Image (cartoon, rainbow, N blue to C red; front, side, top):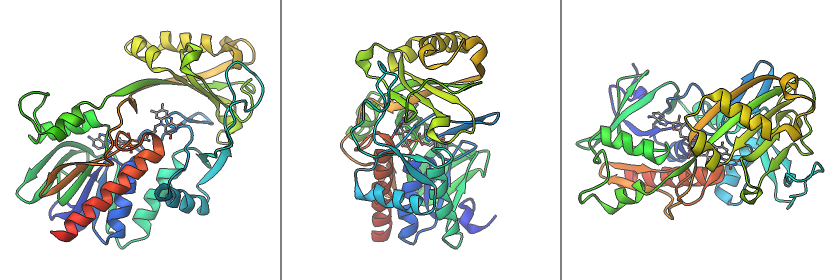
Length: 361
Ligand SMILES: Cc1cc2nc3c(=O)[nH]c(=O)nc-3n(C[C@H](O)[C@H](O)[C@H](O)COP(=O)(O)OP(=O)(O)OC[C@H]3O[C@@H](n4cnc5c(N)ncnc54)[C@H](O)[C@@H]3O)c2cc1C
């Protein structure tokens, strides 16, 4: 096992989570000349930026597009665009009442991955691991089971990869309830709220997320979704569909395939219902955009439950430090701004913070 594995000798930084926040943090750490290990429990990279194949169909089932408003994330997107990983999709989406095009168009660019949304995190990870001398290692299928502090080291216990990673500092980017579980397993916070815990931890405990069902449907013919291939529903429309997209029109699937996101109220209400029942309810509500009888037009389907889809509380700080010595911080889309861009900006801020503290130390 080499030193850069972090298993037998401390690396500079360990990052838990290879979603857009964790990868963005690693980017800053690497730019500061540090050695970094990133671990993710998933088989692939990207977390809630997720693309799935069903037969020959390709569907984005987490984040559907991203926008760029700030310079920091703009730099990442510009690199990905130059590398052919992301393209502009459109300037707005259709409204549900119409079968006409882009009635919700505001002209602000919506971006997508060229072959699917995961092209963005994959390209970012490729740059991290290719453009250096082994200073950055990204390990998938490596689940952190506890995060602790031992003297001046952050210790990440893992299963599926190495047993433990020792580092001079750490960044935790999973959804906050999962981060709190890791900290509790490492005895850095209590298992539940109460007592006189620091305000920072109490702040983290207040962060909650909406769940979201994502239903993927492969069709035997083109859908009736209007150009540019996405419909954004308003909560005032009454639900239960929040988003509906045609991945073929979007340009990522060689055959027609829909992604349907349920709203938070519906998902909460039906979270533990049998998947076949939830699927049937959602197909029924999506009939207007499926050409023909769904019993024959839908040739394959898959339902996914996102437990922590979108944060309902966004705290103002771009990161929260759990420990200063050794430095350990949390980041992600619940910090300073939601969505893909917010998560990336939070990760970049956390990476810069950790690099600064390690430099001082
Ligand atoms: C259904 C849905 C639709 C969305 N639509 C949009 C959209 O259209 N536009 C938009 O901008 N945003 C959208 N979002 C939000 C966007 O996907 C997120 O804000 C963003 O991807 C969050 O990135 P993150 O890095 O903070 O977290 P995540 O992507 O959740 O990354 C956290 C990572 O940590 C890993 N992890 C967790 N626990 C452990 C552990 N114990 N050990 C190791 N690894 C661990 C996870 O596997 C994951 O990869 C959507 C989200 C969902 C779910």
